[in-house]
Length: 98
Image (tube, rainbow, N blue to C red; front, side):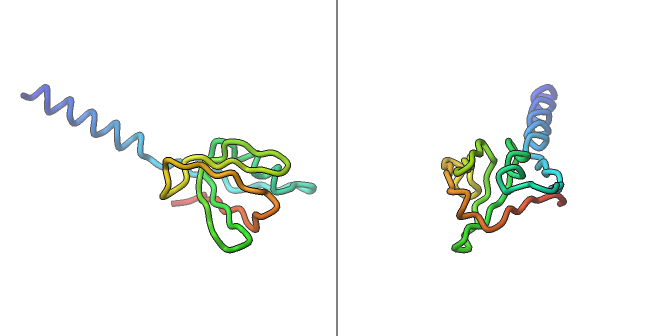
């Protein structure tokens, strides 16, 4: 019985550790940077983008090209990805602190 309790406690601790949010670094901009180059630096990290219509999408940057951004694991729609026209993005929002 004691061993079972310890195992349950270890599993719970691992789940809490896995759920810990990792924040991205604050953007560091250089002369000549574009939205594409900044997004390239956030590959694999969670970002929020604000589209021209005001809608916000939050997800992990999977791929960025000259024209398209692929966000995976959208917040509130975890089983969905989004492909966004980069020219329709008004702002890049990155959570850097709790």
